[in-house]
Length: 103
Image (cartoon, rainbow, N blue to C red; front, side):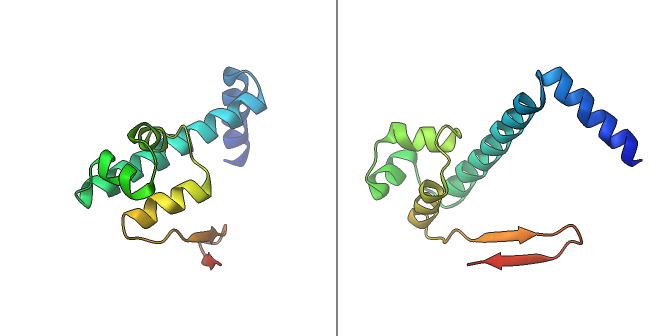
């Protein structure tokens, strides 16, 4: 099973144009997924982009960039979450399934 998994990964890297391109694509996908969750959290709490922008002290366009994954630094995401009334936490996930809060 491990060899098959490795073969799939190698093929995916090849199709993406190499390992670096594959990893960059994976990072873009993660950023897009994170951004989608931010939109969902904002909507669940009843905020508009304009309201979040005002509370963050940025433009609505900047909030749109954050929500589309174009801006995804930890400090930016933490500020966004704080505006919604939450706190961003880091969690380490280990191969055996253990979760540990970082910080």
